[in-house]
Each structure stands twice: as structure tokens, then as C-alpha cells.
Image 1: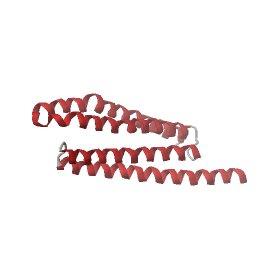
Image 2: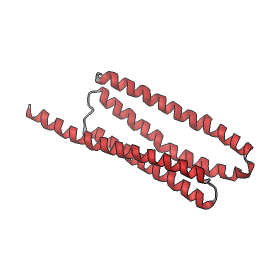
Image 3: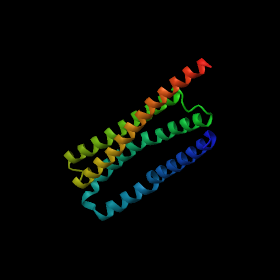
Image 4: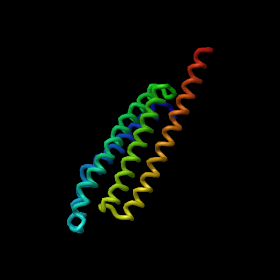
Length: 159
């Protein structure tokens, strides 16, 4: 696949993912929060802390979409293996790690405060595992892109 087509496809995926995230934040989460509050009024005091945690964790995800857009733009310009992209992947990985730590810490703190359920904590552990996997993958991509950029620069200098 050519770099310009790949960049367009990546941008379509980024826009789709961002729209799904916005849908979740604007429609899905508030609607389910309202349903949860109506069905389980005894747990309604859990709602605001969890909404704060979920919306706090959404911010790095949307920042990561902006970083993804920059990477896709660089790929479209046939500049996929650059130190700039390596740095962007590094920022992406740090965002994933911060988001994972904040979410898991919040879930554990909520457990000790009595506003979490053990089943939700188990689900939180799975979500944290996925977030950590994203961190490791993007950190690895950062390393590989930096190595490839160095090789490409050396190759360009020898020609």
C-alpha cells in the first residue's frame, strides 16, 4: 500500500475512533449513568466520582488521537521514519501509561473508599492491562522508528 493511501486510511480510522469516543463521552456514559442511578439508587453516590474518573481518563485518549493525526500526516508526506515520529510515539506511550495509572489508581482508591465493586475492580485490571499493552507497543514503536530514522539518515548521507 502506498504511503498516501495508508495515511488516508489511518486518518479515517482516527476520525472514526474519535467520533466513537465523543459518542461514548456525550451520549453513552451519561445515558447509562442516568439508568444506573434510577435502577440502583442506593449506589447513586458512586456516580459523580466515577464520572470524574472516566472523563479524566478520556482526556489523554483524545490527545492521543491528535498525536495519531500528526503521525498519519507525516506518513502521508512519506516521512514515516523520522525522529519527530519517534518522539510522537514516545509521547503517545507516556499518555497511555499515565491514563492506565490514573484509571487503575482511581479504581483501587474507590475500592478502599467503598464506592467500587470487586467485579468492577477486576474489569479495571483488564482495562489497565490493555492500557499497559498500548504503552509497551507504542514505546517499542518509538524505539524502532528512532532506529529506522537513524539508519535512513545514515543511508541518505552515503548516497
